Length: 469
Ligand code: 3PG
Ligand code: MG
Image (cartoon, rainbow, N blue to C red; front, side, top):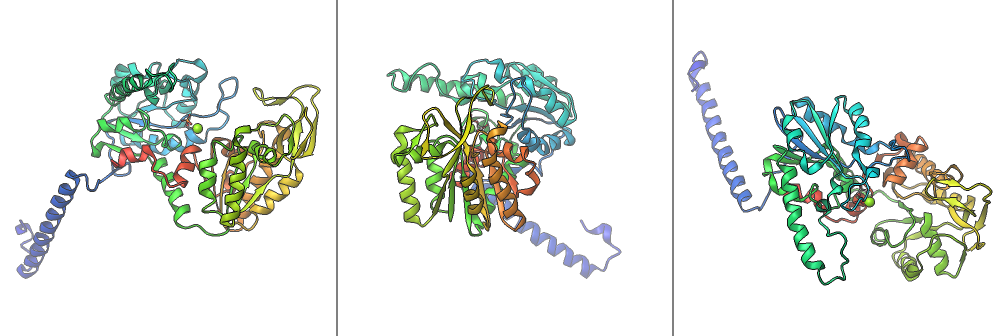
């Protein structure tokens, strides 16, 4: 085999020959061993998007294009679309063809024009730099997928127009004796649905970090229809998983988390978890009033979870036990008549600041007051690791942005002083973008619930499906 190099001294040739022979031998043994372990599912050699060549292949990519739209169907925050572009562009640049799939909103298995992805197809085309075709029925897109040529792209209609996507039976309550049978039937239909989606493509990429905490047809079940070499995480997924890993494995203190949002109940899991990790926890937004009420405060018309008063007190107790400084707002910007649908103050309505424990009956708290803002900013000052999820008020309306803005500004300042700041959740990301702070924070995640579950240390089904866990 080395005869063509006969001009080289034979001793030298022998040396090369022996080196290659022994290393090839070792290489072959390692390969056989790895295959052996793989066959027992002991380890799984994951495919990666970077090393995969999509030339001549059809790729079906799950993205999270669940982006906020205004009443005219215009995208108000495009973070999630921008986030998926590196993956989508790599596939097209390789000479692959692209089948893009996503959900939008919660249409619960029914076709609903309000949640149609046709509203975003032009914006996706603009960003991707190719005209993206649209398949109006995601489960009947075989011909459109087949017709795709290398470098072409197709966007499927909202996956959740089919109940099979979520795999939950609709129109039947859990308490109904027939529920279990309906669920079983739906699970079988979910597999067929996933199989149909899989049939459009040669390979599957999951780049929907925002939906990675859901075990749905397109985020998890579909992976069963591709072998290990032909399924992988996209660049965004890889980046997000890595960002969470970086925060959790290298927490620099003080670690300050800011949790907003309207309900204690939807955040209780992560709040309890964070109380085991952070030094300071700022709780703001609508949940302020459940805490105020738990202490016998007068909260007027403010949002409250009356059945969660004990949960609020439990959070305070746990914080004390763990030595975590719990920071709650003390005053609120309140309004007598706010329209949540159009994010506007109704004509003639009054806006005033009150103590959060003493809000008159006709007012509701809609933002953090000046004292609270100062308190929040002070809690964030000097932090070295920061996590922000959920706004401090109805930031969509200019009268009630100040609380979220104070938090955003304080995070930007701490970041400039060396903190690592991680922002997640559609509303907090929208705040950061609205206030022009996107390049003043360390990392903006496309995940809300997914990010929080990852931070809780839960295995995300969307990632596990690829890893074969
Ligand atoms: C989100 O915005 O939270 C994700 O797109 C997931 O959507 P879901 O919470 O409706 O499952
Ligand atoms: Mg959600």
